[in-house]
Amino acid sequence: MLEIRFHGKGGDGAVLAGKMLGVAASLDKKIAQVVPAYQATRRGGDVDVHLRISDEPIYVTSRVYNPDGIVVFNTNWKNEKKIYLAGLKEKGFAVINTRDKPKELDINLNLTKVGVVDATGIALETIQRTIPNTAMLGALCKTTGIVKLGSLKEAIKNVFPEYLHEKNIFAVEKAYNDTILEFEING
Image 1 (spheres, rainbow, N blue to C red):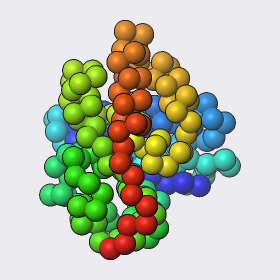
Image 2: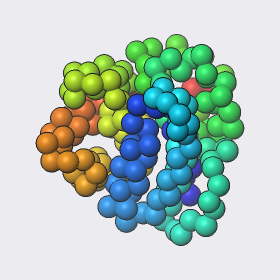
Image 3: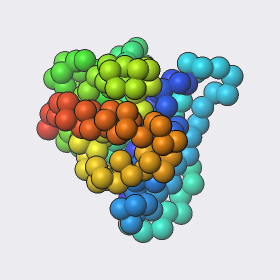
Image 4: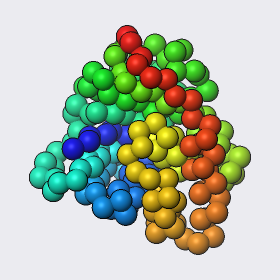
């Protein structure tokens, strides 16, 4: 079982991204569990989405405290880096919405993979809004191969209304192609 934690702010689309990843996993014949945790008070509040993806039934229903990987939607992630990295397993992975290069991140952990992408910039270019959710999914797909790119595109069609399909699929593809990967980051 693979456990992932998404970190974002209200309005980033992290909760919807979790739903789309769950749909894509099911299209790949996997079992997915998505548990969002967020402040209902306002846009911009902290949002965590706890995901599990497995080939076997999932019986755990708690939040993910020791993820195999994290996906950080928040571009101002360095201010909350300690919170986001908490519990991340050694030899895990990170996917981060940033313009920085992987070696510039100062993560201080031994990770197998780090993927970085300017998902907010891609969202502005493709969907004309600062909602990086579909771009972050493209980066996650490139970094981990957790779901097939085609399944992710199909999940977008299942979740979004038709008039949003083309732009969001373009965001996924662009982020997939623009993600910079670094292997074996050592803290």
